[in-house]
Image 1 (cartoon, rainbow, N blue to C red):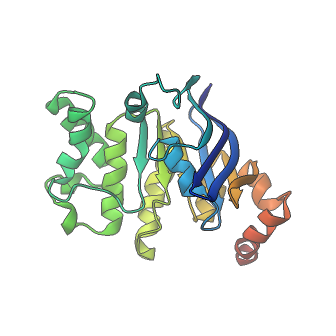
Image 2: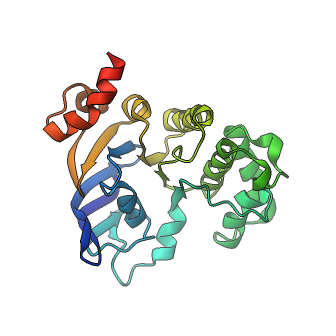
Image 3: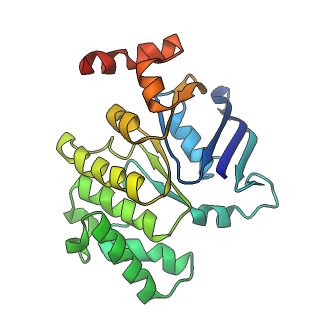
Amino acid sequence: MSIIEVKDVTKSFGERQVLKGINFTVEEGEVVSIIGTSGSGKSTLLRCLNLLETPTTGQIFYKGQNVLDPNYAANEYRKHIGMVFQQFNLFNNLTVLENCTVGPVKVMHRPLEESQQLAIKHLEQVGMQDFLNAKPATLSGGQKQRVAIARALTMQPDAILFDEPTSALDPEMVGDVLAVMKDLAEHSGLTMIVVTHEMEFARDVSDRVLFMDQGVIAEQGKPEDLFTQPKEERTRQFLERYLLDKN
């Protein structure tokens, strides 16, 4: 079953068109990585998917319903689509545990004790169970991002969008976050859409890879096909350095 379907989505900022007719679907439980150069529209696409940006034209369907329809309850949709940002976006005045429970309690209206138990479960899942009472300012970048992933999971979403989740991290911290994401992809059955510059993650963990170039999806396919036999010259050029490094 398609959990998200994108039809002819465009996005312009003034005269500048960033997305130029995007079409793709994401099946339930699928891990889709979006790769491409900076400025190709990847993050804008992700922000349109969770309605942080409103597409200029087009349709986005969630379980068969157009979330851009004026009569559709956008806030209900957002409850089911988690988001992990580049810069963590944690509340600095709250503890790790409070960061993970504020959404379920305030937005989903779940009991505090139930939300805390769920949060602790997911903080254990990402290896942050020893930091329940810590404030974000005392954590490393990698630890903050793992808390952000646990926070998204505690909302029990149908899908999580990851917007370059390792780009703000020091190199030695990248591996910890990617390991958490890989474990989620392999064992949780969660639908994941990941904008990433980490080519090995895209190749090894994804069910499908989309390559974006200048506001369009230039090529998409299974990672073993796209990484070894890209059809488009622009895809080959983008992957050339990565492929050379691996040979």
